[in-house]
Amino acid sequence: MKKIGIMLFVLGLVVFGLTGCGIVEYLSNPRDGAGTEKKLPEIVLNEPFLVTTVNGDYSLTITGARTTPERNENSESDPEQVVFLDFTYENISYEKRNNMDFFLAQGDFVVTDDAGNVLETYNIKDPNRMIQETPIGGSCSASIAYGLEKSSKNLNVIFIRGKGREVAQIRIPIE
Image 1 (tube, rainbow, N blue to C red):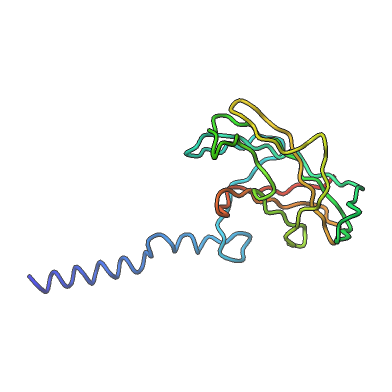
Image 2 (cartoon, helix red, strand yellow):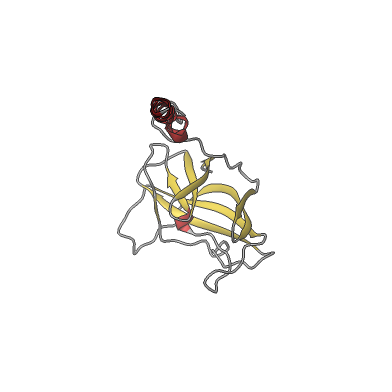
């Protein structure tokens, strides 16, 4: 009886070791044939992307990326290209947190150029598209500017929430 128990225990360890608690599937699903990243859901340009959370629901719509000739004369950087990431968000049912209504801001996006460089925000604003707190039922059209050291034809955007949790991605042609 003791031998059967030991054999079952060893068999369980072997099965557990071979399956790796599902981690094998995650690591064997590389994105773009390189690396070990899992594939994120795609955001479609000009279509709402619904996000469901424990605090409520909201949608994000990426509406485009456009260049601007505007530069910040007080900036220490001198980008070759400045691009606005344009988006709209709608608060469907997201409750107030810390006495603030829902909003999306620069920390909710990781943006890269065609060369894979992570872009820094650039300190200019579009006065017609300012980020604002949005109560339930409300929506906001906003823009965030990014400075690019070298010109790019596209922006690659990863939408993140919480502590860097990647939610979705999109590749946007720059107009």
